[in-house]
Amino acid sequence: MRKFVSGNLNYSSWSIRPLLAVRKADLGIEEEIIPLDFPETTARLKKISPTAKVPLLIWDGIEIWESLAITEFVAEQTEPGLIWPRDTARRAIARAVSSEMHAGFAPIRKACAMDIRGRARAPDMTAELQADIDRLQTMWSGLRETHGQNTDEPGPFLFGAWSAADAFYTPVVTRFRTYGLPLSGAAADYAAAVLDDPLFKTLEEEATAEPWWISYAPEGRSSGYLKPEA
Ligand SMILES: N[C@@H](CCC(=O)N[C@@H](CS)C(=O)NCC(=O)O)C(=O)O
Image 1: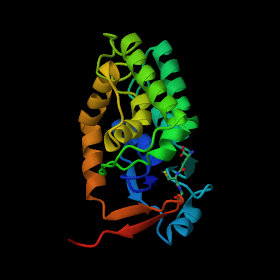
Image 2: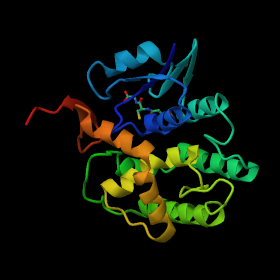
Image 3: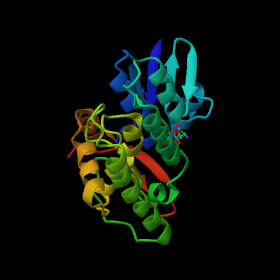
Image 4: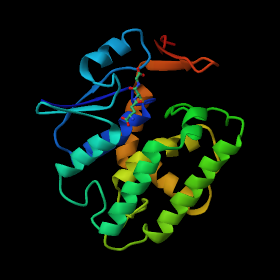
C-alpha cells in the first residue's frame, strides 16, 4: 500500500508541503485526510503515526513521518531535478532554506495560522513577526536574483523551476495573502507565481471545498466543526 495521510488541506501546513511533492512526483500514491481538532482526531492519529501527527507516508510497509523526511523520500523515488534542483549548489541552498522553514519562523506561524480559503485582518505587529517578514522578503527576493534567473532550470520559482523549496514556502505565501502582510518587488512576484501555479490552484480548490472548519479560541485552543449548510 502506498498512501499519504494528511490533515485538512486548508489548515495543515505541514501536510501540504510534502503533499505538493507527492503530487509533483506523480507516483500513484493514494491520499487520505484526517480532519484536525475533532474529538476523535488524536485517537485516529495515534493509531497510525508514532508522533500522533500528520503528515505520514506509508510506502510498502515503510512508515515515514516528518514533512522533510517524506519530501526527501519522494525525491529519491523519482527522477533527479523534479523535486530538488538538479544543480548541486542550487540543491544545497534549496535544502538549506527548506530546513530553515522546517525549524523556524515560529512567530509568523503562531500569529498567522494557515487558512488558505480565509481572509483576515493582519495581527498586531511585533518585533519577532516583523523579523520573520523581513527575512522572507530578503530570502525570496535574494534567491530569485541569485538562483531564480538560471536558464538551465528556468521558471518563476525560488530556484527557477519548481522545487521542494517552493513546497516548503507555499503555506507561508498563503499566509501573506490571508492576512494581507506586506511584500514587494521580486518577493511579491514570487508569491504571485506560487499562487498561480496549477499544482497550488488544485490544492486551493480542494481546501476551499472541505467541509471541516477550525475555530481558534483567544487562548490558542482550537476546535474543529462542520460548517452548517447555509
Ligand atoms: N514536524 C512535523 C510537524 C507535524 C505537525 O505538527 N502536524 C500537525 C498538523 S499541521 C498535527 O498533526 N497535529 C496533531 C493534531 O492536531 O492533533 C512535520 O514536519 O511533519
